[in-house]
Length: 331
Image: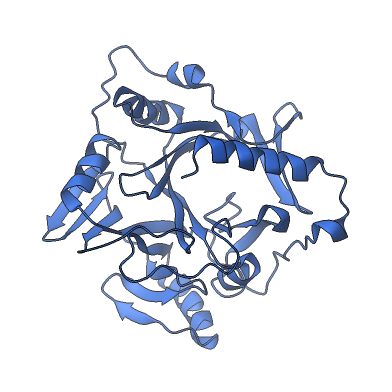
């Protein structure tokens, strides 16, 4: 998660690039061609995020009490949580783990709520617990950012496309409200307006609704172009935007604003975290059919990317050594 100060800094940098008179050559922006001879299945979604933790008991208390996740199962040093259906969070306790900075890995995992009311309940729970979070209005989404107790970035959000849209092209990240006016896309969220969806008798200790799922995953990578080549050129996600000046790119399936965010905000050329690092072990890409899965695996094999079949699915690593699981969606 970014602190409020860093959120403000990034907002200012975005505004500066968007309003700049720099030429395209000076921006050194080349919009990646979103068209290939293939494209990942449009119903592809994010599945499970797997995190290594130092204290499973404490993390389970946080994710149940502060986040409202349901504990689906626990076996020894592992536990699976979610919204009552398939797991979307896997926690594994490992000994002597450390937090490293300046490395690749998870920037944040974003949990998608079905509507503003459910997001309001989730945020009100954080407010009631006085848990630090940063409500932000991205115009086309309403969101808040926080870290869990071991520094793993979290976003909670709902879609609000009726309020406007964003684009990322020619080196610029631009957001337009529904009335056509310009926004930097990182406005303070009108929390009172969001909380107007709450009712007086609403309970805040209820689990998240069953529709809650991972909407997107945002990664620290060592090189944006290299990451786009992998997730677009091999895995098959469509490129929704590349802004080199902002050191970020978004890719997705089926025209979604982004299923994966990619940035070099930990430094271009950042190394992967050591084996004893807290945090991301892998995230899962859920393909809707066996045929869709087979197509992606064939491209992975043709590219000579090492992979290993596990109980969770086919494990491989992107060029920044972020773990990726490919699997067919569970019904």
